[in-house]
Length: 317
Image (cartoon, rainbow, N blue to C red; front, side):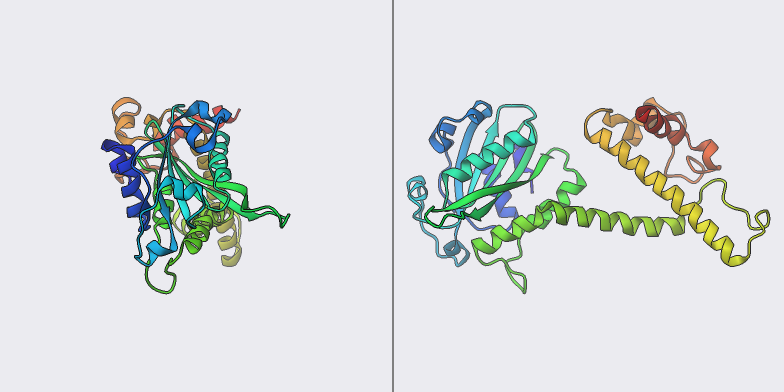
C-alpha cells in the first residue's frame, strides 16, 4: 500500500495509495503548486515545501461517469466531492497542531467541499481529515471546519502494525451490504475509522480479550499454596485467580509505560530487537526456546531483570 512512497515521485505514490484504498477519483493535476496559490499568505506556509491538489472524489466517478476537472473548476465550486491534497512538509517532525492547522486552512479555502490531506515529511506520512459542520447562521455559505482527525507519523519504510491495521480499515468496500457508493458515504466512513472513541474502544477490547486469555495461561512466582493456606478448593481457585489477575495487570501497566517512552523516542529501538539484544546486550538470550528465558522462573529471566525491570522502576523513579 505504501511501497511507492519509497522510490517514486510523491504525486505517483499519492495516486497509487488512494487506488490501493479502493477509492475512485478524478485527476485534477500532476503538478505541485505553492501554498500561496492554495491558501494565501499564512504563517503555516513556512513549513510547506509544496502542495499537490491532485484529485477529487465525486458521485459521478463512483458511477464511472468521469469528466475532466481543473483547479479552476474546483475554485469555482463547480463540482461537489472530496478533494484530495498532498502536502510536502520541510520540517523534519512537525507537531500535530501544525499539521492540523494546514488541514484547516486548506478546508477553509474550499467551504463547499471537504478535503483530505496526505502529508509527507522525511520517511513519514500523515493522513488527515477534517470534520465539516453547518454554520449556525443560515446566511453563511459552505461549512465550518471542525475537529481534525489524523493517522500520524506512518513510517512507510517500517509500518507499525497498528498503523497498518487502520490503513486497511480506510480501504473501502465497493460492493455488498456496506458498500461505499458516494463521496458523502466515503466522508462519513473515513470519519468513523479515524474516530478517537472508536480507536480507543477497539484498543481496550483487544486489551481486555488478551487479559482474559492471559490469566488462564500465565504462571507467576509466589503463587498461593492450598495446603499452607488451608484453603478449600473454591477458595484456593479464587486466590489463584486473584494472584494471576493482579500480576497480569502489573505486567500490562509496566509494558504500556515502557512502550509509551519507547514511542516518544526516549529509549533506543535496539533494546526491543532480539538480534541486537543477543549480539550486544545479553549472553545466551534465547526467548523463543524452552531452555532459555523462561526455563527456571524469574531467576533466569535475563531480559526482564536486565532491561525491563530497570526501565520501569528506574525511569518511573
